[in-house]
Image (cartoon, rainbow, N blue to C red; front, side, top):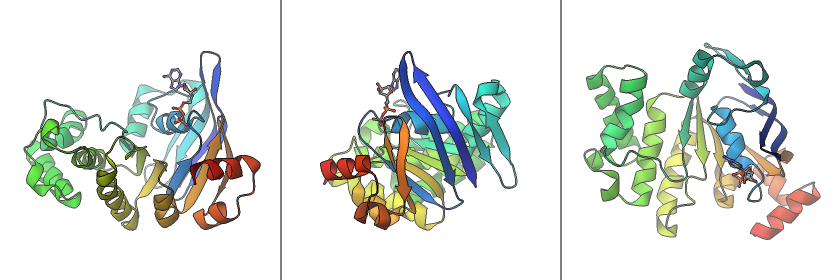
Length: 247
Ligand code: ADP
């Protein structure tokens, strides 16, 4: 289980996150919805310390527990541990353009985790197969479609064997016909029991795959619940307004 408490993040005078609490059970898929600018991406980035909150904590229990109190200036070692526990998939894939698909995937394991090169390559090939790109190992990002690049991005995030997968609007840069392949890859990860937090506008994905849907507005969680409950009987005015806008 992962427990996130009281996350606050400010950019200048902009109070972007105003005390976010979230509990994520092992194997759960949490989908975060909310209007643009509500703080969804910032919150996701706080979960692996790509942004440093001024306040709040994150706790992983299990065999290798970790507790980080952001207000207490966490050590570099703890931040690195947090980053190894959480694999991020970015909106714009963030692949290295001068590296092949395979080289992108082995980067973290070999250069950060110091894994044996042959083993890392073998695992990367298995990951490429998992995301349906076993024949694309030696191609460069520019030779791949957006959907294929994003699936390399997913394989790269998986390569560090994270406990938690974070997806930041993973399909929003894709042409519509390429969205489904990426969503299907994410769905199969969810079916394997992976713990995932997904920021997305894909309501059908939320309905089909999420265990919990969280609605954010103005730096706060306004409502959370099962997708059936949240979409059919939203409780809060701000949730109703948001759902009305996107339907
Ligand atoms: P969402 O993902 O819900 O669209 P974001 O988390 O991207 O929202 O942004 C929330 C607010 O934080 C916005 O007002 C945005 O301008 C601001 N913001 C995000 N990142 C930065 C940054 N690096 N510097 C300054 N302001 C930022």
